[in-house]
Image (tube, rainbow over all chains, first blue to last red; front, side, top):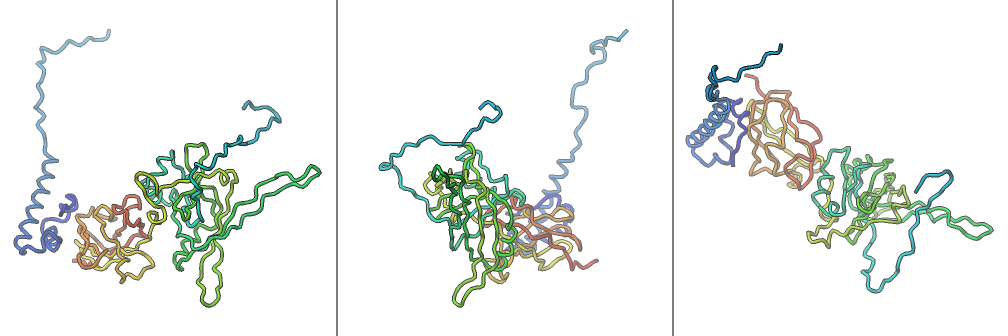
Length: 77
Length: 307
């Protein structure tokens, strides 16, 4: 089963990725069009996986304490 | 024993009981092989570990400075041990010292293997011996751990033989400690629940060469073949490697695939440039275990046409 390294694939770029693997076992029996389609789909998934990893999470997800409800701090004398 | 001046001790063994009719007969035979370990790295913590083939394999694949080297099996053996020494005195003949235990093994190897074996000459190593009855001989320093015998190895000169005879390399093994030799531990892996045979299951590490077939900015095709075997011969090829077995000096690689038609020929994809290098990972990290392989050195990428 074709399991490319994501970082290596993204570094190659989509066109190179498709061209370099089109003769691999998983794709060579397909028509060039189908093979390219399948490889493009794999590339999409690799790209998607990267986006997911770099997703920026909202910083407002936790409840903020009301300033008035905060415990008073004790000052050192 | 409390330490006091001039208070001596002697490592002696009390009388042993000698019933023999119901016991298993002696199953040891002629020594026909050796596993030479780098000094200090032959030890198994327990007898169970020593019966675990995977633990032996780990020693065979370890880095060279800690490795156990399975030597080619012996074709012949000659006992060259010295006689024990006795002191003749007015009180009669008294045992004085053990004679050195020593033997000469003759090994049928090609010139490449002979060259490899010369690396063991004049080395003090911990050596397990294998016999024709498929036993492994070592010793135990504490009745728990198992180690190889401390031995000095000398690889002799290549003999000149008469017509019809074969050149066989003489290798001399001298036992350093008589105590180890006279109290051996005999392992019988062939009669264990999970049986294995050291004479057939042990092998050394093979040197392999990486040779470039073609190169482009995105694809490298290379052959992985055992050294000193004509690459045209099928069994020279090393099959079954995966992407994780290769390492590139530059960017991380994308995929690896072995050819269907040429065994041992791999297509690697990624982003490549001239003068970059490709190598195999360390022996212990290679995904295939039959055979054990180690790269002779990195392959330099060349011939990529610049755009």
